[in-house]
Length: 223
Ligand SMILES: Nc1nc2c(ncn2[C@@H]2O[C@H](COP(=O)(O)OP(=O)(O)OP(=O)(O)O)[C@@H](O)[C@H]2O)c(=O)[nH]1
Ligand SMILES: [Zn+2]
Image (cartoon, rainbow, N blue to C red):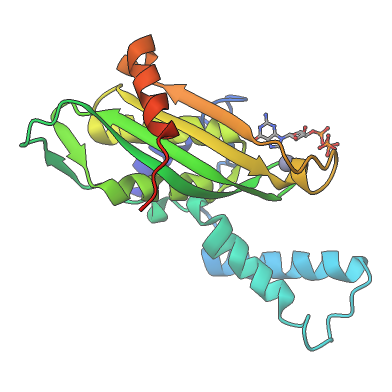
C-alpha cells in the first residue's frame, strides 16, 4: 500500500472537525523524521531556556535531542503511516464461531490537550466473518494508534475501524479504561478517577453480545 492510500485510510479528510481521524496538516509528511527531530530539538531548547534552565549543565545538555527523538520515534511514532502494523490474517479453518477477546492490552498514549500521559488497558474483541487475525496484531494496532496525540474517544474508534477493515467485518468492539495524568496529576488532581470509553460495532450492539464481552472483561485472569 502506498503512503497516500495509507494516509487516506488512517487520516481521512482532516478538515472534518471532531471526526474519527487524527487532525493532521496536509503537509504532515513533507518533512522527513530526521528533519522533524532537528526542528523539535530547537523548540525544546527554547522552552527549557525560556523556563530558565541552563542547558550547558551536564545532565540537561542532551535533553532537547532526547525529547525530540522520543516525540518523533516513540510516543508520537504512530503519526508515521509507515509504522502501521501489517495485520496478517488467516482463514478461520477451525470454524471458531464465538467472539475472541484480547483483553488487558496495555495502553500508553498522550493526551492531545496537555501532552501528558494516558495510561490504561484496552479490551478488543471480534467475531470472525471467515478471517482471523494474529493475536499480537491487535496489541500492535492499539499501540500504533495510541502513539499519537490523542483523545480517548478517538483512540477507541480508530482501533475498531482498523480491525473492521482488516477483518472485513463490522463485528468488532473496543473498551478502554485509562487514567489521564492531566486529570490525576494537575488541574483537579483527582488521582482516583479513570475514563471508560467503548465502541461496539455490528453484533456487539446487541445487548446479549455486549453483555458477554463485558463479562469476559470482568474475568479475573491470574496465571
Ligand atoms: N473528552 C476528552 N477530554 C479530555 C481527554 N483528555 C483530556 N481531556 C480534557 O480536555 C479538557 C481541556 O480543557 P481546558 O479547560 O481547555 O483545559 P484546562 O484549563 O487545563 O482544564 P483543567 O484540566 O480542568 O484544568 C480537560 O477537561 C481535560 O480533562 C480525552 O481523552 N477526552
Ligand atoms: Zn489532557
